[in-house]
Image (cartoon, rainbow, N blue to C red):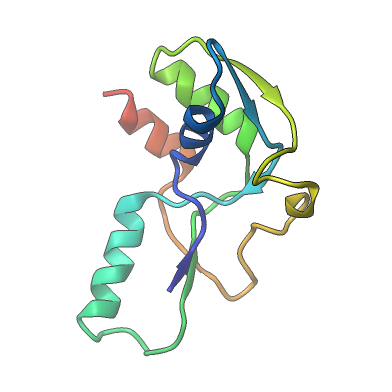
Length: 121
């Protein structure tokens, strides 16, 4: 099984690149998946109810990582200035649709907005 990045990926990247109240975030396009959605597919595969083939799984919508990060940190009450920039492990080779799932990916139901609303509680 292959999965796209998790819904909290932007906050993770911000934690890796944070320097004081500033963090650099690559301007990536991602199609994030909720951990609970991925867990449901893993259970299906582990119990043998799947097809036995490699499964690509992704969230339902393409998102901009910088925007996702800004919204996640705001929901958590964290004041961090984000600087969109390529660098380190995130080179321009990751630009465009490189990290998006292929056309045959299984699409999970939880949107980033739904996940973000739930993470505020």
